[in-house]
Length: 191
Image 1: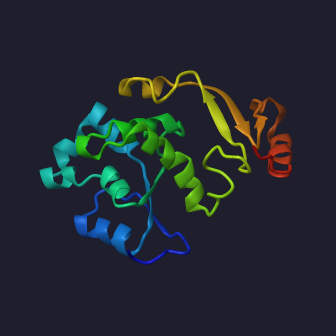
Image 2 (image 1 turned 60 degrees about the vertical axis):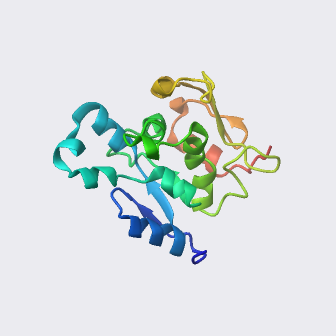
């Protein structure tokens, strides 16, 4: 086992690492990896620029998502907004339907990159990131069970409700200052 990384340093845009860089980042430095696989998925679906302009070796070295997970690495999902759309389902699509089939993640692993792993990366895994008694109740309700849909239906998922600190999040119709006052300065609600 490598170093502990007590400050939880991370690398964003771990896009085309070599095997040695992956081994160093995960095995030796225990870095948190933040990835935006929606880029690769969108490129494969619409432009195919990676296939046209990268060598076969470079193309095959795209974000080693599954390899990072199998090594015990912490992989966080990220939209890289405003470069890509803020919608997390684009990145979930990229994680589950990654162009390199051997690096595709399961829906559980993809969702974990946005929940527990994100909380872990900012030292909040004991407060949030999973639905457990005593944790802050931040969660969404979807129109479909993401574990039962086809891999091709991820982008069709719709958020029906959002809960922050255990309270239903209302639309933005009452202004930013009221939002900030209500949600940033209210006491934390636990499950």
